[in-house]
Image (cartoon, rainbow, N blue to C red; front, side, top):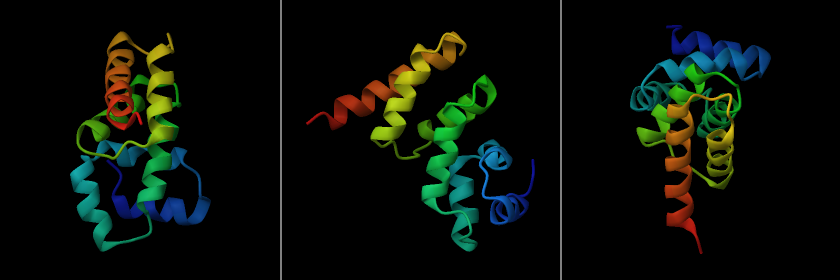
Length: 113
């Protein structure tokens, strides 16, 4: 795994999400601890990395984003829409589609007003 500091420097230099995908290889709680010390990557950037990975077209990155969500990463409306979109994308594995649908539906059910 690339060190978080290296990923932060990549973000500072390029402002692109693709080079940041490896941050998803860390457990979400661990990233929170690491980022609390260095504030280059903010929560809003992590949210965009999740959105980017959910639409990346790779079961690997999508699965890691789903792991983060399972570990407590906060879902919002935009992420819930992306989850539902992932669940209907036949290029994703059945496992990814089912996990995405479950997480998206749970959030929508809890936030239906």
